Length: 314
Image (cartoon, rainbow, N blue to C red):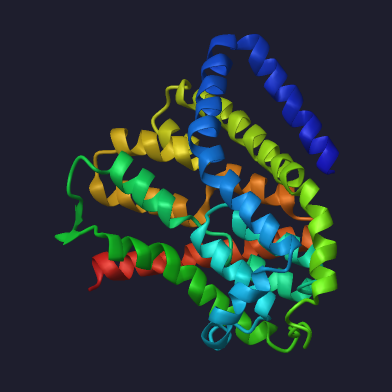
């Protein structure tokens, strides 16, 4: 089924390339610019760092600091805490990739990986502040019903929903999760053995980054095509495919502040179709994909309720 989908998708792109070469060329250039100036600088250092930490069991030492209090909120193992930290700090799709890396190295089990995927793949603080606030929304002070949009409000709207998802689902998953091992600190022999793997750290980091880059370029072409269709809601439709390009268009074309802020933060909370496909590319099974989608669905429902409560009830 997956092969049929990708085959049909590639055939469609080929038809677009022949029929609308100028649009495809412009979309491709936009995608390459996003990859070179946004994706690689933002993700590559984190991919290298997290891969190095996991390969050499150094993430265990980081987790020991946060485990005592985070474990009271999220019923997960010490290694799972590392995935939570990365997922909330490093942005899409690093949370999902970290969970999968921990699972493949048997630091967490399948049930815990399913649980973590529901809430650890989130928009990064850097993207929110540097791109959304300062690049796209820096020209004016934005208000909704006389309430100014500030950094604390944005942090609450983006990060409180996945925290709530993690807490609620943790109540159901607690009986399935098991804390890995009493041998929390690796032996010197094991650590030395892991250093042999360091030769492949860069190569294993480049491959997922190339996969992500392809998705960004492909969806940039789709966005460019949708924008040139010329119907009323083409900008909103295009924005759900690739959020970086979509947010940039929405910030300059949507006049209503309430609608503009809601759509932009909704996209940051969800990630869009491109981020979903990028995340699927690192997940090894359909069940994990389903759990990720379920978690994101719960997240955006809570986001919508929270947004309405903050701006239209309080």
